[in-house]
Length: 75
Picture 1 (cartoon, rainbow, N blue to C red):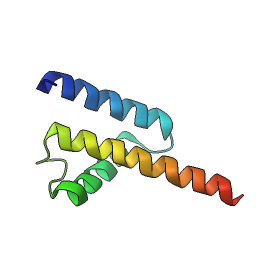
Picture 2: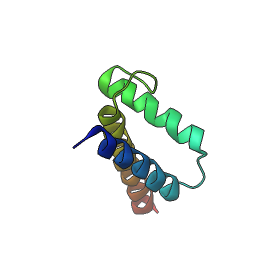
Picture 3: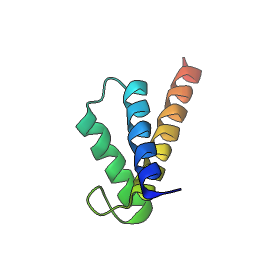
């Protein structure tokens, strides 16, 4: 995958995440994903490669969906 394709996928993934979690502002989403990226790769928003940040977006989404599913199961 080219850098351009990775970046396009990264922005699309942030857009999907924004739609999935509308109560979070854009900056909050980016900050949360950046913290997760730092945990995963040792580099946050400023230093992470697009591929690393994209992986963090996917992981954040999986974590969110798992938490929502667990919350539904507890009701």
